Length: 383
Ligand code: NDP
Image (cartoon, rainbow, N blue to C red; front, side, top):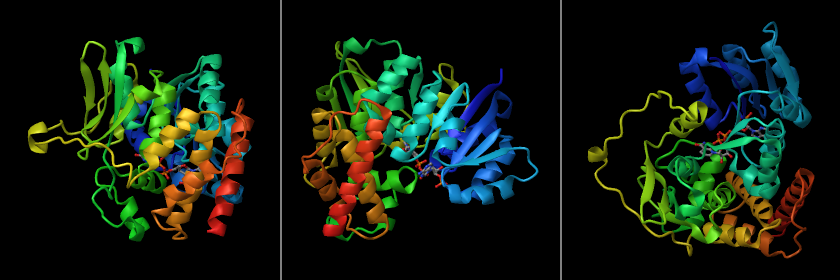
């Protein structure tokens, strides 16, 4: 039976890998909405290839180009944040939320409000909105399927188990490309985004290098799997073969293993609760040889400590942490600050003290996000 799908962030790393799987199973899917920020040519080519109903760019200045690129195709073209949310609200069987950053929050919430199934890659949206998002999921009867490989692994390990029987959850972390680099002050953007195991967008690659990615994932796991923050652990596992683990109270630990290819967790969401074929080679453990594990070094990479503290503080703190990190990563990628300043800036914004009350609605979260971005930008300029 053909199912309908919309992909928010279709031109990104997760978006394109989703389209690759859809392309391999064309008869199973009808594409409704595809969105991007401003990569018009890539978006229009995908919309034409998959016969999408509508293509949307977030950046309004790109609309004329999008219209031109779609001329004669019969595909609707739209632009702007409102158009993005309207497209995300078109009813579909599956929405893949793969916009990067808190910019994806509004459209993801619009999809949640339709009560559909959302394959969530956009971790920053869940980190920032926290209970606002999980409450909306319950209120609208929506289903969140985690795309992030670690959370997808945990989700798989929990199938058939009861959350009250879980003793702990262990998130694995590759440690990123800088785990063994001694002097972090001289790291360039090129070094930081050269991830040893995964091929990802620039922002998440920098987050992996700083370990903020694991910090965001800790908060994400806290919202997706209510076992208590103190039961969620992090272990560095450089081979990225085990994607995460669940330990039950009888002493059994279940792990999910697989290649470091996002098409595996994406396929798990596309086919859920069934399974589908992917072009992955079988896992060859003998060729891999050894799996190793280390405790995270929070002296050199304080991001996981900062994230845990923000999660413990609750309220607006995770949204503040996320916004400050987004500003810091952007500044680092533009070579305005050193790599080692990213965590320093996030810690300063968090310690600023004057945090707003716990957000109770989407507009509250967006206000916290906006205010924290302003504060982080001011601190950058003062530094
Ligand atoms: P990319 O940078 O590769 O792609 C981001 C997508 O979001 C693009 O389609 C981009 O459009 C769009 N976009 C960027 N800014 C905006 C905006 N302001 N408004 C609307 N759309 C925007 O990111 P990834 O695919 O790497 O990551 C996407 C999300 O998935 C992130 O939250 C990341 O943490 C998460 N994730 C990614 C993984 C990966 O392997 N890449 C693994 C696990 C999670 P345009 O191309 O026009 O700029």
